Amino acid sequence: MEPSFLITLYSLGITITMYAFSRMLAKEYVLLRATPLFVSTALIILILALGGVREEGYSQAREILAFLLGPATVALAVPIYKNRQHLYDHAVPVVVGLLMGSVTTILVTVAVAKFFQATQVVLLSLGLQSVTVPVALELAHLLKASATLTAGVVIVTGMLGAMLAPWLMNRIGVHHPMSRGLVLGTLAQEQGMVQAAAEGELQGAIAGIAMGMAAVFIAFLAPVLLPVLI
Amino acid sequence: MKNMAMLSVQILFLVLINKLGYFVAGLLSLPIPGNVLGMLFLLVLLWSGVLPLRLIEKGSLLLVRHLALFFIPIAVGLMNFGDLLLENGLVMLLALVVSLVVGICVTGLVAQRLAKPKREESHGTEFPDHAV
Image 1 (cartoon, helix red, strand yellow):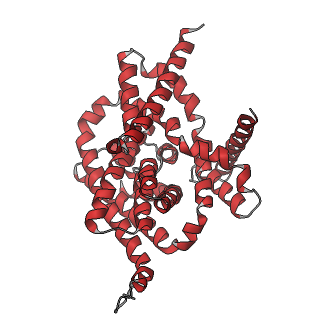
Image 2: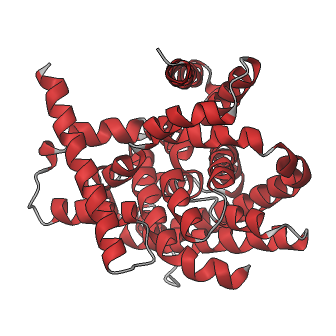
Image 3: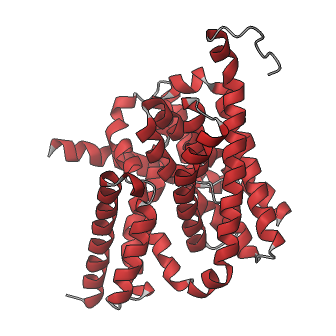
């Protein structure tokens, strides 16, 4: 057996185990609910580094798993369609809230980073912070940004958003279940969806719709808007 | 066993739609990611009634549930970005937090405001707000 095959198998095993482990932690401890993606990424990096597996050794495992990213993005149509009744019921607030929220977030993040003279590659990644990773990766490719950095930014955004949003919404008086789901899905993608689903069925359904719709919206917007802003 | 076969066929179908998305995006040189186009194709198929939901539901939800597993390995590549993160990490974190705070307020308040009239009526407000 070739050693590279063993490294790939080892990397795959580590990745899947840590993914399952961090999901289990998130289920067990409410405080860790928003962190599984961040925790598994950090654990995998740590274990690979300790075991002396370099970035190149890991690339095979990455390609195997990334093969399903495209089909999984396509599959996001299913939750939207399944929950279409919620979409019909709340069409105006969902669409308007999503558009205004997404655009504001992009403008603010780029403005803050520009103020501190961040480089082009950092600005582009930040501009894609609220798009679910598989779509953000494609946009990063189209805009010649760094795919890796963008993925990292989106995961951290999801974690921060899922932790920050419920607290902040309580403070500013956003109690409406639909609005809460919309915020979490639009701004915090997967992790926001998990948080929203924990709050309630409607919140989770709206968050799923919002995540898919935000991805489509920003996929159309970012290639036009970001080059102008940056 | 039968279940596995069914899931495999459904996922294979999603793979094909994804490929079609990339093919059409390339053919028409659209500035839209192929996977997003594929998702729109699937939505059209479902909404038009051409494809019944049950033929695709189980496989799709399985992939959606584990979406993160497929992209976590890409973020693992960050292990090579130590210098960049040391240099820019704080600014990036600040940009993320500030934009999230503003974004949460805008999205949440706009959506709640637009949704409100119905709720206020049900509470029997004396002066319902018709400004929206």
